Amino acid sequence: MASPPGCEHYRRSCLLKAPCCGKLYVCRLCHDAEENHQMDRFKVKEVQCSECHTLQQAQQNCQQCHAQFGEYYCDICHLFDKDKKQYHCIPCGICRIGPKEKYFHCDKCNLCLALDLRGNHKCVENVSRQNCPVCMEDIHTSRIGALVLPCGHLLHKTCFDEMIGTGVYRCPLCKHSVCNMEKQWGMIDEEITQTPMPSVYQGATVNIICNDCQARCNVPFHVLGMKCKGCGSYNTARDGGLILQQELPDPQDPALANESESETDTEPEIENQPESPSLD
Image (cartoon, rainbow, N blue to C red; front, side, top):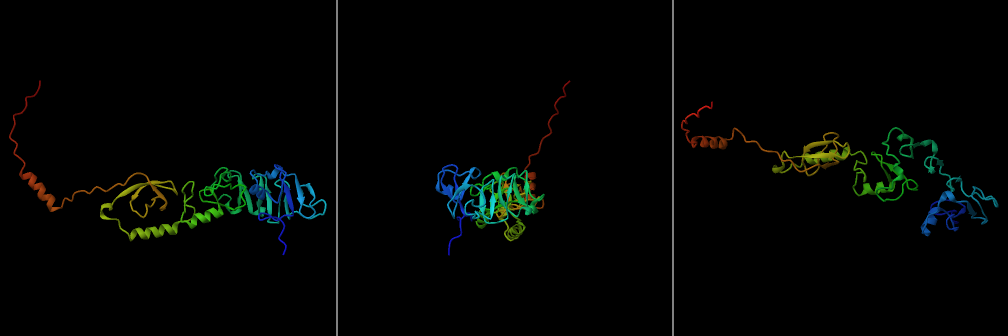
């Protein structure tokens, strides 16, 4: 069986002539993997038909044999590929996988988001222009899908899955919880109930800062976790040292009473002293 036209990245029946070095490659990604420089997709002017090998101006169909170079073609990005409901987003400056009617462009975040996130996400200005904080690779032009965290930061979907797989549930940038952790917090509540602290730590407290709601509060100390009084999260950080409870003496303690009487019995009598003369 013949291999489908194109490369591992795109399905297309033409080669791009790189404006930087003049070499022919199926796509910019193939070019960048082989060369020591990157191809600017927007500057591509010519393509070569994979069927008749005619070099010509970039367009969707071959001017010589009329072969279709791609079901989808963008004359801005010079993207040829099979139909994936792509559309070109002018504010993003690149093509996105659609369908277009299921997405909107957030001007502050400066990227396209699913419609169900309209008015339902935390905006971070130009968030997609930052690299993924896990792999440190570009997000804005990446072919890997991105995930919007509750804090508004972006991760590659694959990086998010790997992070969760290693037991990390906090944003690498701001430490906010990346998903609903109520079930996990309930499990910690139960473990703390079943694991009392040694007597020396009974009543000990600690000041904390909550990574989820940014509240500052004083809470009971436990090695399994310190729970925020504001939102109930265990995603907290200690703010200072341990505060041990000072034990007050029990007035009903017999030993304390005997000690008090002993001190009274041995107290010397004070003789009457002459009064000091008053000053004029």
